Length: 103
Image (cartoon, rainbow, N blue to C red; front, top):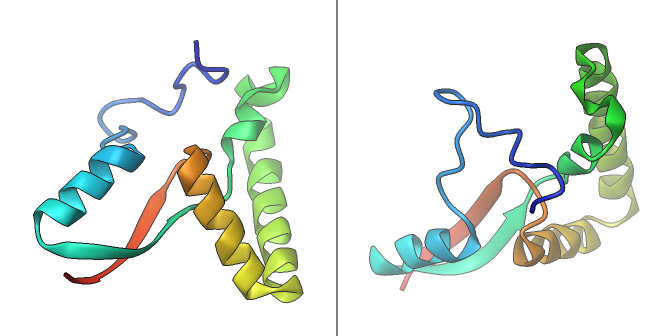
């Protein structure tokens, strides 16, 4: 069982369309080569908390994400990219982004 119990799957607005492998398959099947696959900030870590059902805490979680991301960008952008690529590989993040080129 997933620790977050897929609480982000809330049709019709929030659906999980792709995982790492299905997105990779799609991109490669239409003739592109993946240069980088990155996950965004792992906001799911907040969903593990007992407080995650409290709607008043959403803004604080978002602000934590913004401040953390800004801090990491200022530390070392390339290491942040490495971190986001590792997060994608681990499927630890809500959003996957791929950077591609024609194969």
